[in-house]
Image 1 (cartoon, rainbow, N blue to C red):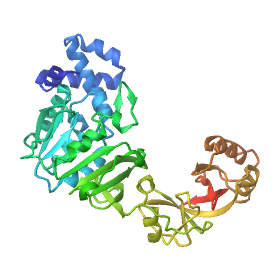
Image 2 (tube, one colour):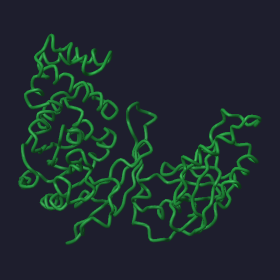
Image 3 (cartoon, one colour):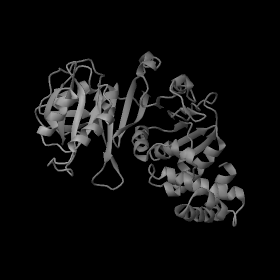
Length: 413
């Protein structure tokens, strides 16, 4: 899809071709749809309509307004989920004017624009055309100003822009680039841009090795690392700088708001990174599996006192307690039994507990969980056993307790 395609797709003819492509792709595959569309539209127009429908399909699980937006599949795949984008955008509520560097089709810019005006910068004219069309589609055209510019040479206008957002591209030629200096723009350049404004947020790879980050926070400039979990996975890591930084570390869990359909609630845990303050002891009555954002933020020592909990191993992020405590920051399991890990002894324990099906998870264990799970379930479901095969799976946790390899048999809470 190119700039001319994006403009044509916004016309009456383009919308008609898109509607036709939507119906054809719902009923069949891409190639037959293109052939049928080519009877009514020029080849380039048919390809653009199909590209838009496939882009919206890829976007549908991320943005509520996906069926109104303009993108292709590649642009959609680079866009954050709406819940994550809106949570991060809220930091800019007190900003006067925000520069979004490398805005793409505008997923983040559209979210930020609900809090502050945005100068959306990208070196790709097609992406800027998508952004502009999307701003119009969502009624945000007066809040977003597209700007053609390359982050390696472009700098924010100091008299207007007071905050900056940068989500560097971490893929090139279809391959993921793990080293920060291989991103576009490189992290060092993003930090240079951030230094020109009072507050900034730089999105990083969620699995980034924090030791690889250059020294920040010099000259008294506050910094914060925030990790965000959503739908059971780690979805974002953001380095906040200047006035947008609050605490040294933040772990945020986004969950559906029971009171409002389509809305999400953010629960955040903040504090200093772990220093080994949490004591260790064998498992108690309950086992807690912290959300990935808590572990990545290094806030196990902050979470443990809230649960009146301890670590079961100094190097493992599982917590345990004797009282059931509710928290959005960890899954809780009822401990049925635990034992030194040995496959035969584990099977005998499961049979004694009349378990009919297991899910195996691990942390700090070298065992192939998939292979063990298949083997255990094959035996537990053997003919002649009286256990209920429809029962909820019991969880077997392979981990370490004070350095020793163990299996903890748990019920889901």
